[in-house]
Image (cartoon, rainbow, N blue to C red; front, top):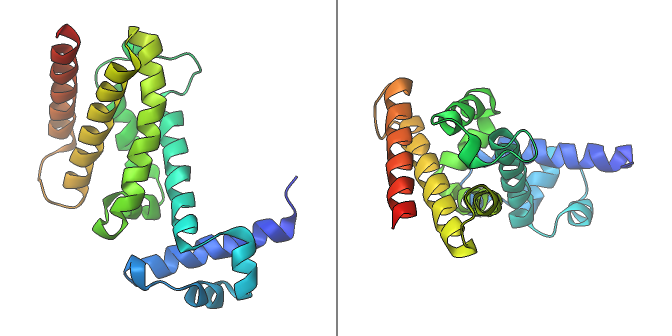
Length: 189
């Protein structure tokens, strides 16, 4: 069981980071700003995180874990048993229900390093899933997983940031079509 003081401190630091991240570019955020906002001692910050990068990565890790649980809610579920559009529906629900800060992290150019970390971690989970579900080699499973997660999250990012305008139904149709035709073509080769 985690000490309540430790949990309160981490919560305070994470809340401070959420607030400051929206006010300043990533590389301008300082430990002093965070500790002042969280009302904790600078040394206390370093008891919980090695650096601001470490704190930012903790959000990316949390997002990746949540995405994998959404995509594969039941242990043993494989992509081959999932209906077309399942991913879109789950990711759409994630972006609608997720805290604004998650969407900010995944769509902000300033946090592209965190978005890449999320994609990488989700791709690792998908790779394992594809190996089991399709009997693919690790290399082929990794190619498929990265294609799906990168393309899908990129299209969501483009829509959320207003770089493409289309309805939710249109986006779903395009994501499903791209993912299915891309995977089918790859798997046949």
